[in-house]
Length: 337
Image (cartoon, rainbow, N blue to C red; front, side, top):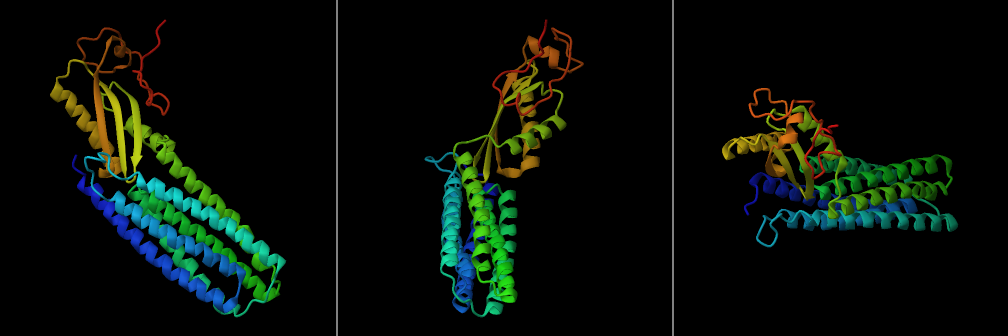
């Protein structure tokens, strides 16, 4: 099976983005270590410890996207995209561990406080890392959503969660500098540790859903609205619609009911029209498999083809496709008395 060149190109671009993110993570980690060495702030130390997770997670992301970018082969006919879910699961777990580690360090510092030095330099250095993290995370999430890459989205969310914890730490350091209340150093770090843990949980939950091929309700709802809005007259019914994610590729299959009297070429044109509609909305990252069904007598009641000369029953109403009925493996019909 040949790979879609546009999908493969997107995967390679995702890999280049992740390599850049991993490189940035290393630089920001070293910057925070310097800030901690200068200030001896436990809050900055915990932020630096979280950055070690950024570095490890970034490298894992690079490896997963390298595997994901490989073309399809005989052993992996659907590609290697599933590895991104595993990468995101590991990254989410590391984020959660970092959150608990920060809690430990913050509580330990509350019990054994110490003097903080050179706060002004520390604040400047850490603030710079926060700004860079946020911009890199925003870019990463944007590219991840565009190319359907869970690994990039996870990396972006991780960077942004790191940003908010760093912002909290900067606020705490500023308060300490003006109030000389040293326990604020630990209190702020403790507060933002829970935000980090929650972010890790959401990433792990999302990755497990992908591994288990859980229905993406938001994606399915968007697709149903698009199909209803662009419905063509020969599309009498659409059912058994399923969407599976393999990294940056969406595999979509469904059953399309068309008039039984269409020949093979005419039925294929309807499938091509449906495929073109989906790819116009979602790009070349979609692989569409459509099974065509010929209409049956009960289909007449939901078929609005006025010029049909072989109708067995009068038209009653068009069935609006919904998330519930479009995914069932049964043809739609109007209940008769």
